[in-house]
Image (cartoon, rainbow, N blue to C red; front, side):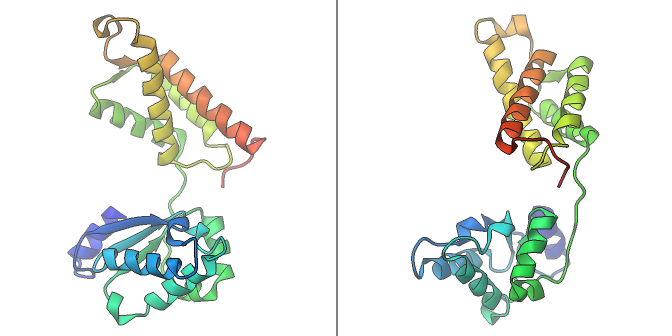
Length: 219
């Protein structure tokens, strides 16, 4: 969304590079009148820039979900918000279901950008770049363990691309912290090893398979 805002601002299509981030559920209130207020509040903050709605397929869910959709649809033709770009992000299947359920929303979103799921190599590349930024080493054995782990993770239902790679990164650094807690940093070195990676991968796979109950194809 930030890259898109940069491009649109460079082309003069929006007046500023600001991105206001929210989610479908965050746009929905808990009592009568709150939803409309929340939607207009977010639109006002994003005015002149980009309103980025992550997990947009949750928009419309809940008791006041339809009010959130109707308010957004009306606002997208309101002169007060001229020059504002709304980006709805989520899994293709879920976004399609949401748009089919609301013809007003479907008519407002006229452009679609589809990004392919990351493969294991993409995940390892992102992980290695993060490690370099944190000045942590990563040897070939650990990289190989990562690639094997990601090859399994991308097949699990609900695979989240960068979001799940970040989860693996966070679990790996937690595993490393546990490993070195009783030893001096000098003795362990500033590096991630196979054991750290294996612990992290196993943690995410176990959590995902327990939640889903089974392994299924990629979305």
